[in-house]
Image (cartoon, rainbow, N blue to C red; front, side):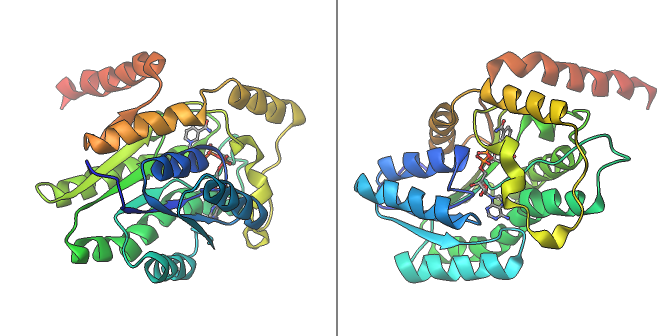
Length: 270
Ligand SMILES: NC(=O)c1ccc[n+]([C@@H]2O[C@H](COP(=O)([O-])OP(=O)(O)OC[C@H]3O[C@@H](n4cnc5c(N)ncnc54)[C@H](O)[C@@H]3O)[C@@H](O)[C@H]2O)c1
């Protein structure tokens, strides 16, 4: 998508972190933006902030792990703006621990928010984007965890491997059309991801027990991350160049190389 001016963006998880930075960046590029989030007060504050800077922004409360909720949000977006050109699948949560201790509820929560959400949103938005015939883009915030089996982050890794597979498949399906696909493959970013449990619905039942020390270590890691605005800037550039893989942390290249070398090294035994 080369032209952002006047186009309509729908962003999930837009009340915080990377999603908020992306919503701001889309607005600064003169897009009209629908912010979707489960956290109502943060959503309202984000919408007010964007509107205060002259951006045509609206908000819709949405649980991305619920297909009906996404369908309602899509209908609200079309009712508000008449069209939609850019779907940004960003909402995410983290829960983890050693594989044998992670509760089924946490698996369902993370896979619902980080993977099924993308499938639901593509089903809800792609037919409209295609029918409009004005081109469009689907950008999903994946993660380097979509390529690496990081210990202790099972549900997040599995969800992001899924997002990588979904994005590669969709890109192959729309190749040659005016619809682009990108995935943002980031490492640590300074957001509120370490406080994900603030948005965990009760229906998922028991949480995985984690130690205070492990929680503090993860929070410190997140605080040491890159700024969301930097991720948003690289994402804007990647979308406008229609890049499928948008990497944001150059220092992580050796980890990816190691993974691909291990796969290729196994192949001669085929
Ligand atoms: N922060 C990092 O280090 C990092 C690294 C790699 C990938 N990511 C990915 O970036 C994306 C954004 O996360 P972030 O780091 O900005 O975290 P964040 O907690 O700051 O923002 C996540 C947003 O998602 C929303 N959300 C959570 N559950 C939701 C639901 N069911 N429905 C709708 N919205 C929901 C939250 O309310 C919040 O506004 C996620 O997909 C995450 O996996 C983050």
